[in-house]
Length: 379
Ligand SMILES: *Cc1c(COP(=O)(O)O)cnc(C)c1O
Image (cartoon, rainbow, N blue to C red; front, side, top):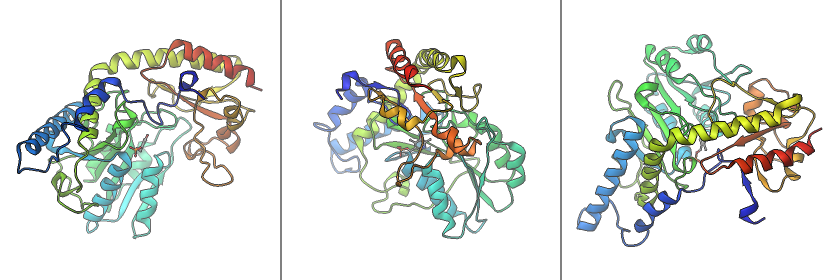
């Protein structure tokens, strides 16, 4: 399958690197290869200066202070550090954590892992729209609740969670609130003070930056969040994440944040009009319906159930389209998407659902072509 003929509608899985981002990174693989921790020579100190300016760029994008940003290898690592780091640090205070059934596997798997070391996790339900209930949350919060984990936007459905309201409730109980904004960054405004979150993560490869780089925001006052490092050795990143810094990756992440900050309005208005077009053509005449809240949703994502059809079989017949089903095929028998299941879809409905995620480079022609190849397949 040549790349030219592939219609890529899987931007929520990963994005291509923006050419401007790539250009910003290139010198840091060759002439500017120096170690940001080499304080003994000018080249190292200069590299440290570049990293410092990248930290400023990322903090401006998120509305934080530069000193509140830690560079990591991506959101999976940030999630591990935030959840494990805080849980083990605040163990004396309590052992209870709250999250939701529709969180990303990275969050759910880390929580499962903590259960083995004695933590109690509440995995709260969502409604058919994919939204959480504040009353249920407030009734689940207790003095031992040290941490709450909620995503800002769901990767499978694009549904946006009411993070600020829940963060407020957490703070009334002096509990720490961590937000996984990996999917939201670049597609909506992400500001740590408006969201009132204490920790938040983003990943470069979901926003036209390189794979293998991310950032974790850790609030330094009101409240000052403290955590135990999960990777030791050398004391980089305030001792929270040791290891020689991935300077090209950090430069790429910073550039991706800068572009997202400037372009997000244009990006999102184009994407949402193309998404509407796609959705109208695929759901008219009762052929399909959209899973999750229509109102509280990212502009680029639509998850459509085509009743009576099997998404996996359809995808086999659509080799030119890059799409996702959300079903986990790690075992011999595919598992339906845990997100759609939590929203109350039957297994059959979940297996009939396809995620379309558009991006900065999606064109009108691609949407038309995608629709024209899907419609003849539908039962
Ligand atoms: C992609 C994604 C992750 C994992 O991020 P990586 O940087 O690929 O490790 C976590 N959470 C959400 C919501 C995601 O979409």
